[in-house]
Image (tube, rainbow, N blue to C red):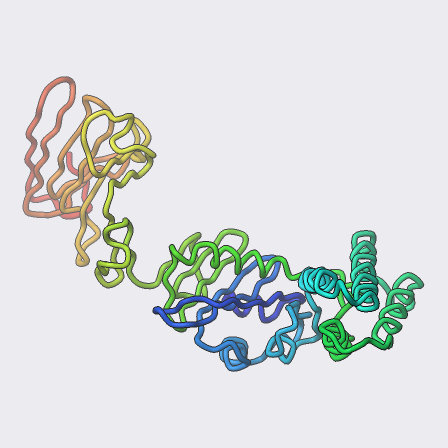
Length: 354
C-alpha cells in the first residue's frame, strides 16, 4: 500500500500547511501524517482543490486533526478535531490583546483553563464515554462559555468560530487514538520550514515518509529507507547549478563505502575508498559486468594483504575460481610474496577453472 493509502485508511490523521517559495513563487507546503507515516506535497493552491487532488476520498475512517483552516474542516472525514495547541496559542494572544476589556480577558482565560482541564483528562484515560461525569461537566462549561454575551472584539469573533466548530473541540476525549493537538503535523511542517534554504520545491513535488524508516522522493511507495525517483546531485557546486544524468548521481566530494573517512585514517590518497571484511568475499572487492551477461568482465579481488588479484574474464565466487569467457581467462595474482600470471582457455562461462 502507498503511503497516501496508509494515511487515507488510518483512524487518525493530522493535516497542516505553510507558505513557501516554489520555483520562486508563492506556494504552499502541505502535510498529512499519522503515527507511522508522513506525506508532504508542494502546491500553488491552499484551497480544497489540493486536498481533493491528493485525497479524493477524504479520510472516511479517520478523525482529522487540524487548525481552523476551512478547507481542512470541510474535508470529508469520520470526524474532526481542532488542534488544542493552536487554540491555546490564540487564546494567549487574546489575553494579551484585550487588556482593556476585562470581560473578554476573563472569557479567554476560562476557555483556556477548560481546554487544559480536558487535556489533563486525556492523560488519565485514553477514551471516555459521553455520559462520563467529568466529560459532561466540561461539555456543559463549554456551552456556557459559548452562550456568554461578549462585546464586539476579536474575542467575540473567536467565540463565534468556536460555536461554528463546537463539535470538533473535544473529539479527542471520545477516541483513544486521537490526540488533542496536531503537533505531529506541525513538526513535519517545521522541519521543512526551517530548512527551506536547503530544499527546492517544484509544484506537485511530493515527499513520502514512513516514520518507521522509509523516505520516498518522487515516489509514493518507497521500498528502501530512501527511494529517489530521478537524478541526484550532491555537493555545494553541483546543487542548484548542475543537473545529474537521468536517473543518475553526481557527487562533488569524496566517497566512502564502509568507511567514514577518505582515505581511511588519512593513510594514502583517494577520492573513493572501500572498506570490507578482511580475508572474505565481503571484503573491498569490485567487479564489472554488462547488461548482456552476469559473468564479470573484470574482478578486482582485494582479499587480504599478500592475496590480491586482477581477474580478466574470470572470477572467484567465494569458493572456487570460474571462467567468464570460453575463449580465454587471464589473472594477475600477488600471493606468497610473489607475482603470478595465469592463463586458461576453452573453459565455458560459469565453469570451474582448475
